[in-house]
Image 1 (cartoon, rainbow, N blue to C red):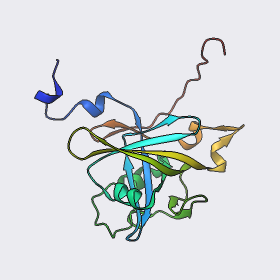
Image 2 (cartoon, helix red, strand yellow):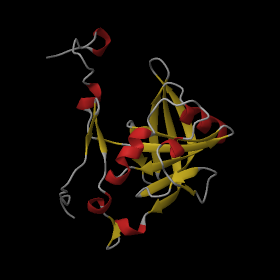
Image 3 (tube, helix red, strand yellow):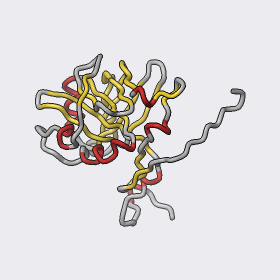
Length: 193
């Protein structure tokens, strides 16, 4: 099968997000005058080391994007298997004044460098200062770039100086309504290492 996206795929479900998989989930928390907000984004990734930077993309002007435009800060909470159901609960289309932390039964913790809540039991959280919001092609597509100014790591996830995925068990988006929860990991050194 071949298709041109502009002409449509003819399938019952769009295969694009299932092709680009697995994708990490950026569980974005923000704060604004209306309260706290928490929402998962599967168009998320790290994009640079020095300084460390991340990005996530929003399809539509959602509360996360509005809050970041207003405050200039956000926190990326990393999703492990223990947070999977809460992450799913926080993805609902709630009114602006609804606190998704409360909806999902999550405890909040305070960030150190920014005025924003974070998920208290997340395996890791990245405190970010927004550096740029890029308007992408299409209808209401936005990419948010941020510099990581603080990193929280849950102590039990650090094994022999490494942030160990076998402890926190990452969750990844596969497309459609599918998620991956890997149970095994492989270490492979690069040539010359």
